[in-house]
Length: 369
Image (cartoon, rainbow, N blue to C red; front, top):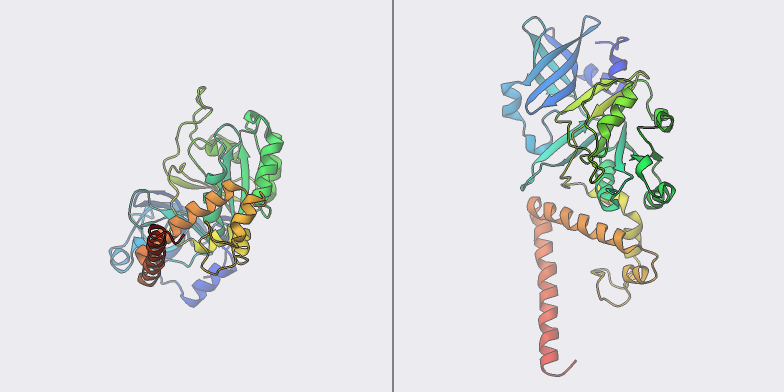
């Protein structure tokens, strides 16, 4: 199979082509990209005889038997797949998922440790955050931790800029928190504010819109599409929040030639094995911790704690430290559940702490301290 003029328009590139050259297509197979997903049903755009078409697709029985949705092996929107067409090319069966170049995923809402793919094979992530009263830095930290893990390039978009009381102050706060990430403020009332975003919307590149419910992703998506294609609802007057309207993930072609993926608003954004993204986000705190007097410092009351010293001098913001602790606890929880060695180390650590506390209590009861 050679790259036709159609494939690059949907994000096909040399890395994907190399996979097909190593695993040539059979006569009954076609390459397709998933452009919509609702539960276990997919809509794909396929490429056959140098033309494109669209079909409703589902996973083959063999694929379900051999793969596990727990380990991100099931496809999601943005994935490139190999499938077989049926019923006059109106239906397809997915047999294989090509290796991803990037993947944004989260813990499936609820308890347990199932993973849910949000977006695959994206080049840029627009992390949307409301600039109104719903602005939340801790929530932004959570999104950025997963974004850095995905292998795509994050861009922070402050939506509803017209509702901000101190927009420049918010921008400065976000830039200080995430110095290596572009930050853009946009307003649906002023289309000119979208111009800086268009520098990221290059032909054949895939951009995904991510953010909590009500931040205005669908409105922003329609502005970028230059037509009302994504369903939206107005904001509520009592709290400046929009109602959650997007219920599925979809991939659209923009006038610029870029591809835009819209996703449902996320009320839960749980971490799983996102250790690399977490460490990238908080590299300053991790570096600070290396200067503590004790290697096993818990950063609480230990003497010579560099973290506590930075908090006391306000070199480290208390809110940022709290965000670090919350996400660290979440990662450790997942690691304990899935890695017996880490669980054992965690038990040993707490045994030492408990033993130390018991010794201290005994010393205090004897009047030794």
